[in-house]
Image 1: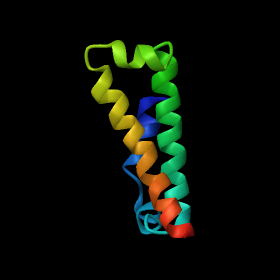
Image 2: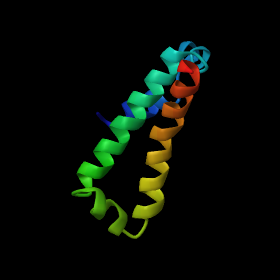
Image 3: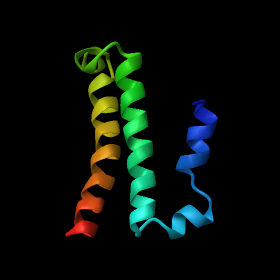
Image 4: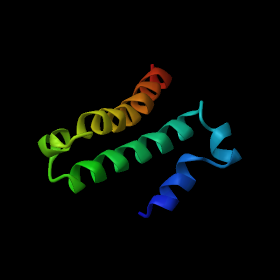
Length: 79
């Protein structure tokens, strides 16, 4: 997926912004976060190598938080 399309999805249109507090918006955010985390780890040659780069720790932790935040929201919506 090209970077421009990811930006388009992240800088969401009005419809997605309205869904942000609902479970559909949380699932969309979770899918985007999981995809970005998977691509980041794959491009670095593994999870350990993702932390070995000069800015790898901050990049990897940021992307992990992009995955964990919607996951936490989904858990809160379920409970």
